[in-house]
Length: 199
Image (cartoon, rainbow, N blue to C red; front, side, top):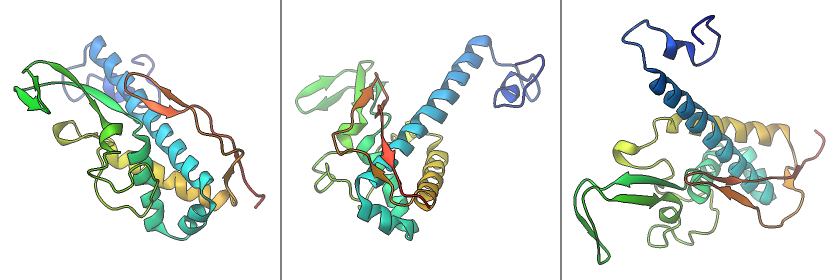
């Protein structure tokens, strides 16, 4: 990407302008993060929102003319799907949690999808409710909050609005339970077969 430079996201990273150059390891890690955090997760979010709309024609019809409801579809897709379903962290101090001591330096796995379906935080947490109010932790929390959250929300909102406008009668081909592929941190819908009416 240094010679010759190309018109994509990497040239600014490999350029020596504006400060000391990144090492090869830093460049590779940053490129992987751009692909993972900037593409795979957003694609999974858009698929989850599309599945919710295609599974509920009444919701899709209502959301077509209601921007707040479309935003609600995106937020519920984030909460119920939790594309990044877990992350590993290291305890900074000793913590007592439900009778178990987590020692400073212990590696712990935080499971966002479990927190986003906590019945103590959400009424009827398994139900997709685009009118639901209240925060979720699909983008993490605190200093680890996802840097790309505003962009992911914007991309998903544009996708939802475009799908509803361009694909009338959007629906699933069948109503069998959706299969998910889950890796160590990412969970996404494997396949989503759709149909729609000619516009």
